[in-house]
Length: 72
Length: 316
Image (cartoon, rainbow over all chains, first blue to last red; front, side, top):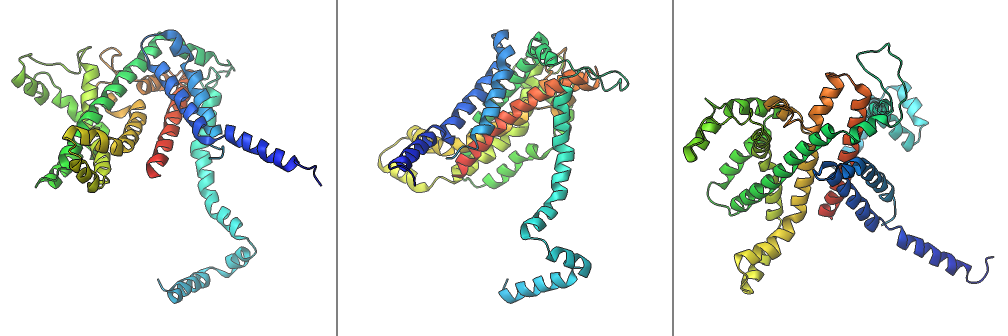
């Protein structure tokens, strides 16, 4: 038998995690990263930005794959 | 189909199954039978899509050359990626791709939306004109590239002739000129793919309920307000979908541009995919080309992820 209040604590923890790991906002973050990376890849202004573009796109794309498995 | 008829079809199927096969299948669960049926597809998918992809990723970390099969293949880490992402030439090809991508999208959205609004008015021959406008989209890109080279001929081509009826510019060498060639490929792609944008915009326009416009008229909204507050928000998801789809397609554009300019003059119209093909099958730098392919693949995959997200939003 669990201690009194443990269930509530677990529920609150669970809700807290669920609040942080929601698919929608994280998908938006990943989409912005992908779009930013593509801009960096194709912009004509800075070679430094071009050099880092693939890392940003890769981070965004892998991030998108991971966060698309988060609950709604 | 009625229940009895369904039963008779199932019975007939059961009777048609050879006894030996039926005996073996009887011991399997539904899940196992489902796996049995989809396993050939999965095996094909693994062999044709997944294995080459993983192999390309592996090759991108090596100095492999496909024209020297006996040569020792060395693991060189991320050197191919460093070369690609530090090369001014490759950066230039990316900029050529960006020029093509941005201008085709801008022109296609403006013209496609305009045409959709016009067709949506429902004038007497709108059905006929919709069909006529859709024709370029149905042609093969290679065919389009080939016949536009004839249309772009400076001396005999109709394009130069039409421009000269409005502005006296002489023989217009669209494909041979460094400043005009990037626009030549933009014009052809716009001609070919504007109907696609128009079609999706038209679908969006047809989905708007007329009572919204009636309510706006009661509120004395003018045409611009109706467009801004009703039409545009309602067709925006469709437009976004069309732009993303065309964006992905144009990012990996190859056939039409190769037929039209072959990447020339010089390398002014050498898009990323054309350069990739040169590196892989003309210079035979397979490892380097594999790294380039991986960069393009990840970019397209990222775009496709956003596309699927937008598609789900439109559906919901």
